[in-house]
Structures are given as C-alpha cells and as structure tokens.
Length: 367
Image 1 (cartoon, rainbow, N blue to C red):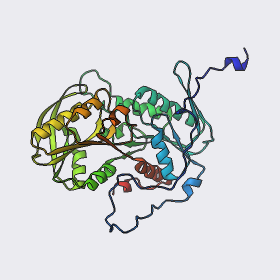
Image 2: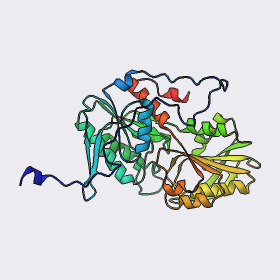
Image 3: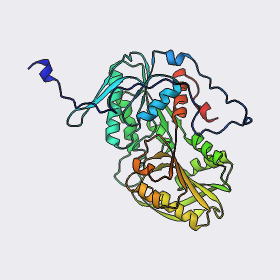
Image 4: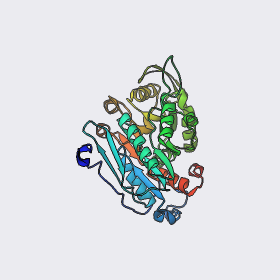
C-alpha cells in the first residue's frame, strides 16, 4: 500500500472550520462597561497597552469552532491576528486538528467554551491542547468563557459524579498550564484545578448596561439561595436593595418557587443568575415577583444556554428583557423572541489575556 493510500480520508472543511485570521483593529472599550464619571463632553481616556503585544511573536491566540465571533472580537480588541489552524472531521465525525504556524516556546491562549454540543466542543478543546503540547508551546492557557459540566460540583444525592472536578482533571491531563474562566457556577470549582485559575466576572458589563438604563425603584433579585453572594455584589454596585426567591429543585431542570424574601411591591426587579438553561426557574420567578407586586421584571445572566423550551417560555413570559453576554453564541430561536439583549465580554477577556501574558494583575479589572 502506498503512503497516499494509507492516509485517512477527511471530509471537506466547512466555512466555519476553514483557516481564519482576525483583522487587527484598534482596541475598543468593554461593551456595556460603566460610563466615566467625567463630564459628558470630556474625551474618553485612551486605553494604555504595551505596543509590544502586537509584535510579540511568542504571543498566540487560537480558537476552536464553538465561538469564533467572540475570539475574533478579542483578537480585534488586542490588535493581534488569530492563529492559523485547520479543523476538519473524518467521515465518522472524528475531529482532525492541525496547527499551521510555529508555536515552539510561545505563550498560547486557546479560546473555546464547552457549550452545546458539549461533548464535541470539549473533545475539540482537548485535541487542540494536545496538539499545542506536542508542538512544544511554552505555556498553554485555556480560555473558557463558559465552563460546561459545572453544575455537578458536589454529591448532592447518592452515586452521582462530580463532573466539574472531572473536567478540570481532563484539561490538566491534556496539557493545559493555566485556565481563564468566566462566572463559574460555583466559585469553589477553582479549587478542583491544580494549575493557576483566573476567574472573571461579567458583572462590570451587566452593571454598566443597567446603570445606563436608569430604571426607577430598582431591586436586585437572587433566584435561589446559592446566588445570594453574586446578587449582593451586583446590588451593591448599583446601590439598590436585594431580595431572594426561596425555591426547591424537585428534579433536573425542574424547580418550584416557594417564597419571595424581601419587599418587591412597586419595584422594578432585576433577576440575576449565572446560567439560563431551560428558563423554567426564570419564568416562575418572574411570575412570583409580579404576584408579589413588582412593577416590571428584567433578568440578566452571564451564560445564555437557552436549551429545550427556553425560547418559547421567554417569549410567552411577562419578562421585560433578558440581558446576557456572548460567552455562548445566542441560539436563533432565542434571538427571534425580541426579548434577549446580548452584551460583549470581548474587552473583559482581552484585558485579562493581556494581563496574564504581561504578568500584571488581573484583579485590577474589578477594582
């Protein structure tokens, strides 16, 4: 058999799988970030960044297929090209990945959320990490705007897996040296990693949006007890009261709202959560708040999973608006509802990536 006959046959690359390179444009401010306290006529302060980054041949950003638009925004923000790769599939669906440029000794960032299809995107990420490791990359940082399998973070019933720990182990075994994550379902998941983890929060982007709306009589609402700390921080940034919804989870994706703790009568409420999946909890919380006298109800979340009947539920609900970020590409049926507003976290991720590469503090992003 000749070498050519022995080679596996690859399916043709689709447009989303072909080699891509981002266009370098000037850096932009974080979308939805709080506005400056200076007078309206004052020019916006220019973002300070070392000019060495765009010319640094040992700085590389690569992207999987899960969220290419976000990666292109991040590259545009930083003024750097996206790393060139070839991503294809064998006829049976197996993933074939190849780096098309030298990464030896480079500081490499791989952007890939593990959103739906979760298993495909996760395996794709592992294959990319392995290719980088075998190509002698100096350091590999996985940038996961959405960390899949995070909701199973403890044994809350007999004989179940702790998948958030499993995924952390898988990423480290594949060869990741560092992780950059956005709004984990539970902050303690950072402890499941034995490598450095930088945990970002989308709250600066979301707070800025609602601050600009200037809504009257605001109250921030946590949809469950587990999200109280997140909601309290959000409420403090807006300078408004906090309310809590007491709910009980009866099964996977099934909840029952029990009580509203706090006064919401005559208030404009903002429900804050990290993930909106099937929107069952969200729509029940909206109904509970309105039944307790709330005037209007908005909602915001970092990760718009919006699976199953989510779009239909949101469209039929009395929710005024759902504000999410682009950590996950918005599903077409959710966009068609007209009730979902998407804000970009590209600036937030770009600044964090730059800080990690330049060995400066990431925590200053939240000061």
